[in-house]
Length: 102
Image (cartoon, rainbow, N blue to C red; front, side, top):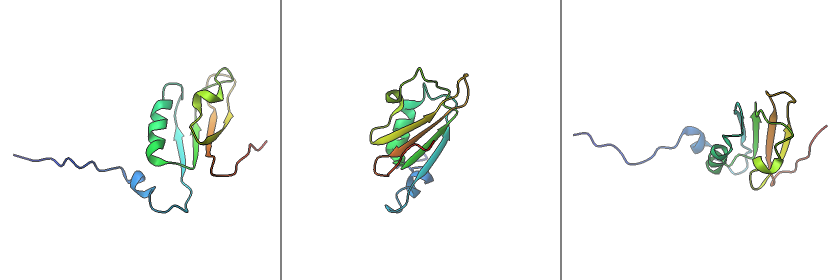
């Protein structure tokens, strides 16, 4: 009879993200629509603790408020597309100095 380990092995990205507290962790995800994936993103970031998170293909427009997609402890910057596709969202840790560049 085979016995399976009950130890959960975390993916390498989670293990590597804990290496140094002086490094900045950048995360990029092509989310192909953020509306129904934001809860998953919050869970992922709880593990990763990314400093700068870039999301592409958010597919949202100005009818969605920043508050709907803001991670606690982060500043949010968006560049929405006018017609149904594309879009970028950046979440920058409030521990870092950031501002929107025009």
